[in-house]
Image 1 (tube, rainbow, N blue to C red):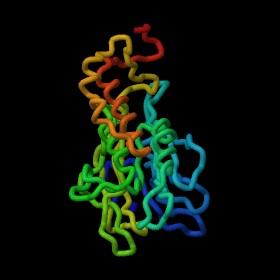
Image 2: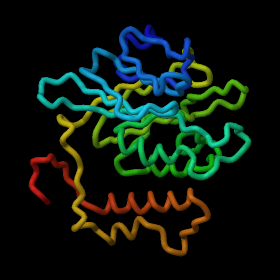
Image 3: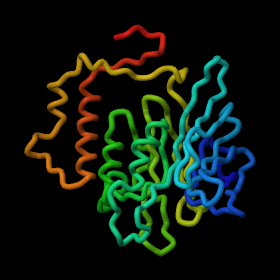
Length: 276
């Protein structure tokens, strides 16, 4: 695996369901290794040593997800950082013929991992035609599409590139998704390595760099000047709203949030900026 990426610009490598030796994932000489848990971990994050000055884990250890903060080499006293989340979206029932139950592990994905990370990647276990043509949507997949449609989030995957080859001879699928905050970082060279497949997932590598010179910068919304006419245009009419389950409720929530963000002016500020 290291030979395949040593001469590339890759600085992040993600592996799902990595083969373990005595409970420990394999090491790569030129990469830091961050397993999500000491034993029986689902996700492993590898960070190229030469690309970053320091790394640290900023989430609680969990078998199914890990958030790592990496700091770039920089001469400034406050070098830029990137927070990377690598996760496995555990199904409520591992029997693929049984429908997921509400409030499964998408809940920590939405409310914890995305709150900590600039980039969230991993096995989402959701099919949808937005990233794989011709696929029937899985239950709860619409909530991931809402993330895909958010103003500041983008999908780094090459569309229709398969990432999961199930060992039960099921149809290969694109289940490993990489979402990133385009206001904070740039992601390029997203690539899979089928020849180094771990169990039923291909390793995924990419190059990630921050857009801003300091992690003290962030986007602020001027809510007093929200264009409510524009917001109303982006929202469905009341008669079009049909909430049947929690997925429909989450979808409406994301639509409202997206409309407010699009209809509200913003500017990039630092802690020294004047109030709006």
